Amino acid sequence: MRNVLLGVALLACCGGGVASTVAAQEQPLDRIVAIVGTRPILESQVEEEMVQQQAQGAQLPTDSAGLAAVRRQILDRLIELEVLVQQAQRDTSIKVTDQEVLDQVEQTYQNVRKQFSSESDFRDQIRQARFGSVEEWRRWLADEQRRQLYAQRLIETQKQKGKLRPIPPTDAQMREFWEQNKDQQPKRPATVSFRQIVIRPVADSAARLRALQLADSIVVELRKGADFAAAAKRFSGDTASAAQGGELGWFRRGVMVKEFEDWAFRLRPGEISPPVETAFGFHIIDVERTQPAEVLAKHILIVADVSQAQVASARARADSLHERIATSNGRVSFDSLARIYGDPDEPKLAEDASLTDLPPEYQQLLAGDTTNGLKPVITVGPDTPRPKFVVLEVTARKNAGDLSYEDVKMRIRQSLSDQLAIKHYIDQLKRQIYIDIRL
Image (cartoon, rainbow, N blue to C red; front, side, top):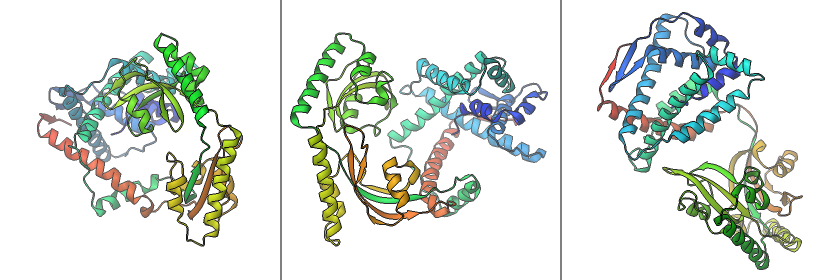
């Protein structure tokens, strides 16, 4: 399902040349082109979608038959969305709050507005997108965002209940999808596959105790009413979120480490957790809002100090493991050493990782050494108080070039499996609702 909220933002980026021409043309009187349940779909909605497609760079057909086919495809998508929205609104377990809609609208407004140097240019572009005012555009955004959220949550709910299982596509369907989309595929970047053992220096028991005592004292003050954002900016070792007052945004399970998530999804809004220990330190968690399968939270991370002696010990361990592997002639299992000594929160294997996505220390080593095999120990964050040491073995490399069908076959399979499951579910819903198409 395409997120229609992106349309105006993309229109802003593209300048709206073709779309402006379409918008400026005289429009016929609006008419109903379909009815879903008791809700009509108007011809103007189809035309708006066509404007959005042009804003995103799509080339519409110039012949009447081609334009009619595009209009019918758009109408079918609008019908499918309406079917999902109506089903979601009948499900009392699915909620969409006014506040989260307003939050999304404000975020979209800010993202689009900053693309223009002046308020006048911004408002001109909004008018070219066929909105009478910024306020009218925001109302449209709010309505579209609410509908998209209802549809998305219905799909998510069905997946969680096990009622929306992936349907494996045929090879013919996968090949057809590839042929239709291969021209839009980006170039394949240079990639590397490797296995690694990451050694992180660990604080001693005295340092851990001092960190825990500090975290306990902060929890006491927060529960008395101290300002969480101010405490995060002063004490948190998570520099990225500390600057934002500890804000982490909305997240689902599987994003954070387990110990953190267990508490985050247990807390009630406004409740302050006790110190929660993870491999990163002691977290103080405050859940601001919740919705099905998601929480909006902030945290303060108290990190135990690591002495130079512990850093030196971690480096010595990495050097020792590197030596054992290098001199074993294959008798020592790299994977076994990784399971025993590697940081459990760090990946042990990487397949076809883009070189440009790797930490700079990896890039520096691998850019100058194009061979496979065991590499010198990498120091990640050498100028930080808590550097990590990496024993790295490169297993394969690929040069940059065009993506092939085999490169993306698994991703196509996953994407089509999900799409086919959703399409099957929508088809079932269509048989249960009145639909009258008049286009």
